[in-house]
Length: 324
Image (tube, rainbow, N blue to C red; front, side, top):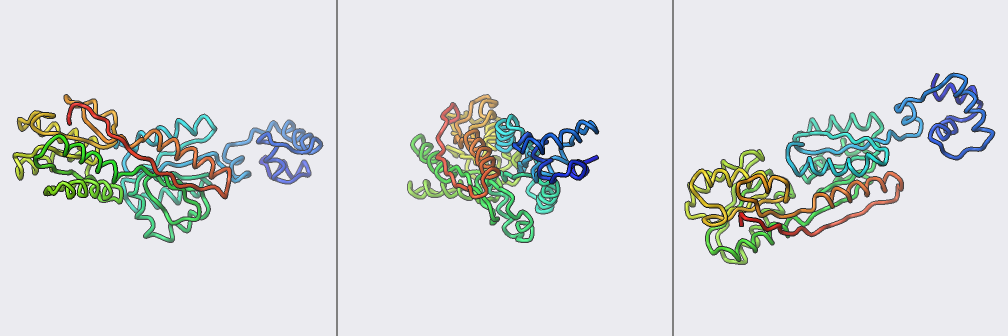
């Protein structure tokens, strides 16, 4: 027995059965006919069957690069915290930045009739180079955090990464006249905006920029080693992520530097990792909780209203602690 059988025996449409099962208003006489069949067979609708009937599984997906990164885990946690009490199931998709993994996830999500998707980070902008994949998304609601996809229904929620690192660099420049290096994590549009913020501030101060890059967030000690080798007189290292800053601090301490005195170190995200170092880390607060809440609320509004979309840009701030 399924909802199609119930509709046939009760002499009503499938949509009427769907409305009955989801406690929506229908005519009393139709409700009585459906209810009689439901009770007769002691029918218990599955979530899948109900979802397919009303074209909604009350399921949303959060696609991230690497769930081990505090930015992605905190974002996913906040979105789940907002939407779960409203009856949504939240699926976390750990793509590792792979085109194959991302497209496989998207296909699977569309096959289960997912109600909407949140893409966390500008790393997913590479999907714009895969128009066939985006075409599959169709009019499924999409919210991009710090990115943009060329799909029919896409809302954008940004924090101004350029301003975040620009302001941090200006702050560090006010603390030291020595060499200031920057460690860039990953080659995304967001990472490039951060790097450009550093370069702009350094240029305005007529100083020489020193940029080092890594692709693995746990490799912060590697460029730090290179910085120490190239510039033993380094006075500050600005990092594009908190975990990178944490690795940099550990390597600098091992080399005999006093953090906050001999060399200043800053991070980005103002995550819990800022307090795990022996010297608490000064960091750019990119409003993860606020951004995540806006993503969740925006997606819910897009699901409820096909004409709704938005673009939100938030300003970051600096969380000053002991490292700088």
